[in-house]
Length: 188
Image 1 (cartoon, rainbow, N blue to C red):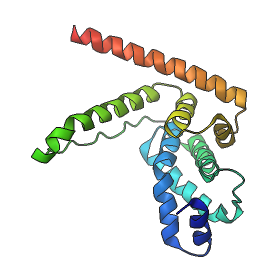
Image 2: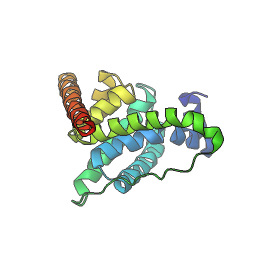
Image 3: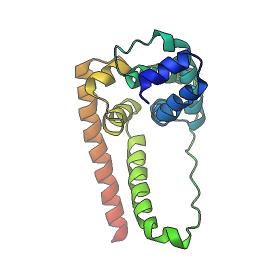
Image 4: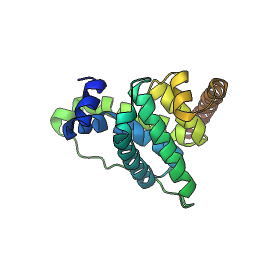
């Protein structure tokens, strides 16, 4: 079912359709909020607030832009507001536990670990970048938003988005290169 039908059904009172929108957009909404806030609990709260705001404003959405762009803009603004109110302290993301693998899972475990290692490497590298650059890289490369969509979400100019993407890519490469040098030196 497409978003327009979901929205029509939500406006008619169908809560199941709202659950579908939440399921589709919650992960990226959390990513945006986390990139801005840098704190898991604050990001989760901002995302919840953004979904409530989206629900209340849904009747005002007229498909002039992509729904995702409209919603991510709500998330972005909500997270910025929360950032201004956020207490100043550092939290570290909780590490996930590794479950024992059954015999059936042994063959795919290596592939899974490699994918997770890549994800973790990217996430670690993004955390070392300035928050605005990390957010723009996430939107552009992971969410595949166009520069125009990023401008709509962040209210930055096209040239500003392009410059920040360029700087972010350059800094991402430098951080990753430094990490690889350290890893190589540790091996030797």
